[in-house]
Image 1 (tube, rainbow, N blue to C red):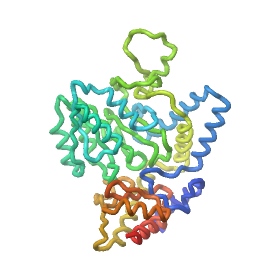
Image 2: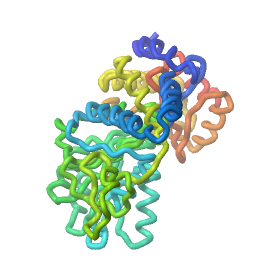
Image 3: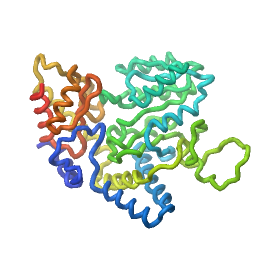
Image 4: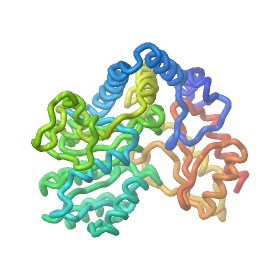
Length: 391
């Protein structure tokens, strides 16, 4: 029995709907199980809608604020604004529309970005923007490359804190942000694989000026449609793509020929009507995490312990000529929440594991094995044993 089993086994009874104690769910980096409280949140939403009808929105906004407060506390960021939306791509596009891309058509990014950002930038590149893709493997070289590529034509720097394929942490993120700040260039950080895995203090790292994309689908256990864009309190950007939920307080104002304005709250980059059921689900999960004492420090220790154990198990089982190796050899303090293994048969291995009811996933030649706080050492042993039986 490993130390992390104590927390895992105490959590498992709270995930009865997903039956995590009896299933091998190792897509924790992609879709974690929801605690039973999530289902209670959905039921609460149904009761509210039936009772309040169109007055349900105030209740939904209250639920969103619970998640905002959680994020402000997680990031040690009391003054940050957190705009809620259906997915990070909507927020990304809204933010991109606020940049002066006519006069500054250059965007600096890396070769390790997730599809939402990469695909959108590639399409914009086809329409004439200059997108600079910097190698992401070496953090020091990346920092220097960002510094060298910044110029008066640069509209933004866009990069990840934890890379989605390998779980490698960008250890020079704060330095990159400071370099961009000196050049008066906004920085967008994709933190989908950082939230709830790798603690980050905005105060300590002096990141008040950055923009941050956050998603609830993975490590937050909030499920779909709970994504946020963190932006500075003094943000003066005016998105071109804008919906009426970014000026909700102005609905009753008479129309005039003045410039389009935005509310002072957290919804500057918002679009329009959505289904608030996801907020009831996410808020219920947030309160569950707090009741269980799942602080940033506790979560970090749990993931690091599980990942260390998975690495050891893999190394013990691996053999010459297996055709599989670590895709991430960085130390644990430079690694996020999942095991990344490189093999030309990664997709086949994923399919074989799924036939045995073991949930993992593969991206190109990388097999990703992601535990969750409720994952035990016995389950880790079973997935690695089965992996090598497949090999």
